[in-house]
Length: 275
Image 1 (cartoon, rainbow, N blue to C red):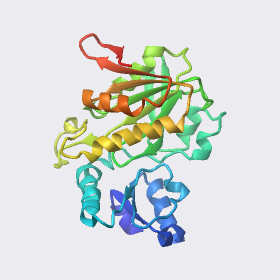
Image 2 (spheres, helix red, strand yellow; image 1 turned 180 degrees about the vertical axis):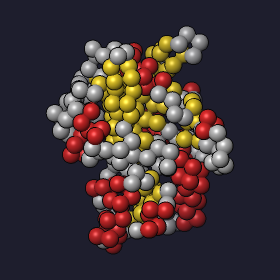
Image 3 (cartoon, rainbow, N blue to C red; image 1 turned 180 degrees about the horizontal axis):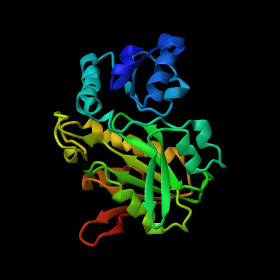
Image 4 (cartoon, helix red, strand yellow; image 1 turned 60 degrees about the horizontal axis):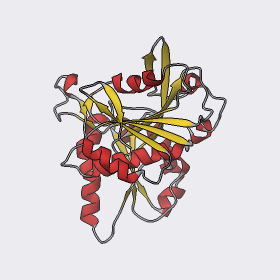
């Protein structure tokens, strides 16, 4: 247990034996309670425990063992050592997410790492609901609103800009105003930062790295999870990220109809529809 207290992340080697182990379950719970990043590494086929059902995993390829390990080590070296302690948060349970009478403010009191975003004299509260290897997914609405689903989901994907930067999700919320039944799903990350942690905090930023192509796939997976968690009838997707990611996402979500995809135009300061 001391090792978990001293670590930035927990790699859980998944196998039938580990899934059945009560000791492993206690370690997972301890890491989650502390807001640690958890990376399931599926070494042998087994059903993931419920506690890891919404956590992105890496699958071991017995024909490419070293590539599998390199994939795992790449994320550990690039992301975990730098950012796991910066964006902690205990995910709310699936059971709570399904309670339609729960308010966002009440949910925030039962977890850690929730966001509080002032918007036009009101407050948007967003709680962490899922996490991939490099991204965190938040579900938000105005504080006194409940989890009761609305017809439309606003999905905000924040992949570029300084860290932390709440202007983007605040802008999406202000786009509709406090009278609108906002249901905001915010995808944040991955976080890039210098390896020298003594450098100024302003040097930390959100950004996809071309050197780690797995980050692009991971960000797409985070968006898929966000969409899957709240299957509203209509989705409005707002992107702050590389244009290439925008087009990749457009190809990926063609099957999710109806969907409106927006991209922020820096020159005009408004969101323009893409599809």
